[in-house]
Length: 398
Ligand code: ADP
Image (cartoon, rainbow, N blue to C red; front, side, top):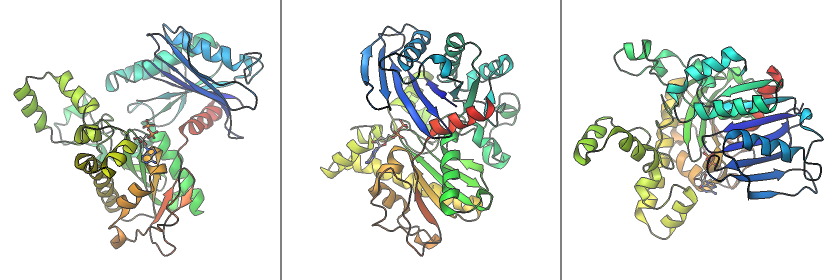
């Protein structure tokens, strides 16, 4: 089945056309600057087809973006399908499903209304996701569409993990609780880990570290998420590229009073100017930080160390939460690529049976067991594939 996977943001739209059974990608790409000037990128994965890099295409709304995608996919010369009728289903990434969605779901009017009801929980993301769904529905009437939520995998968390110590009416009335994100990625890599270890996932305790621009760590016991580091929003948990992660809420009052900031200015600082960018003053990109640290920049070194220390503490916390761990998984940009950071993040954990093989760890972007032969807790590098996961769910439900 040919499935189109769509990840719509407020001014961007990522797409990938694939066959989830064969795990074949026909084409992928990106529409950027929607509502501004419009840039279109198209990367066919079929021999002899031409790649387009950020070419100008007018995209006043997401509708023109989808139209550009469909036109190029079915282009007589450069396309990868004969006609857009070959697209049998569309899978949409949706950031927030609240407590309404514990799994992916086929989209109908009732589902759309329930997704819209989650908008206040993710005001930057969900409205953009909905815009993407509506644009696809208009362009491809009758084609089944499926929503795959970042939060769904974490709906198995017990109350003890998702409850904030706030007056209970804020949960009961306002649904303020830990939701967690990156669920599609955590679900995918933990399933792959079970396959690599040759054991049913029901018998495994796994700690999944998704470390990229945004980062989260999840405790997965018997295939179910039982705790995760992101919270009510993706601002919580680890320090990230530009996000602060967990901080003392009292800091907000102190800084807002001292510098006369309103709440949106404060949140802009916490979301866009903090994290490893804020601490280093150099960059949000870990490669830049490694380079700056190697040249002697102490703040860049501190920023990386802060991040690594945060991951190590979560590994310890989640091993405690689950009463042990069979494996630690590293995925996403940093987790898949940085051997050095992986080494730092597990250093000192030998007391709990974590032992890395430094030679095996010299690997990038390939499923690999990088633990020592006698390690009690395995360390696995597993490239994530959220698009494949979305396409699989979409095929199953469509
Ligand atoms: P996103 O959250 O945007 O999907 P990615 O998962 O692509 O992000 O991760 C991006 C991050 O991964 C960047 O900070 C980048 O510097 C980092 N990264 C990629 N390769 C390496 C590497 N070899 N060493 C250190 N960091 C890396």
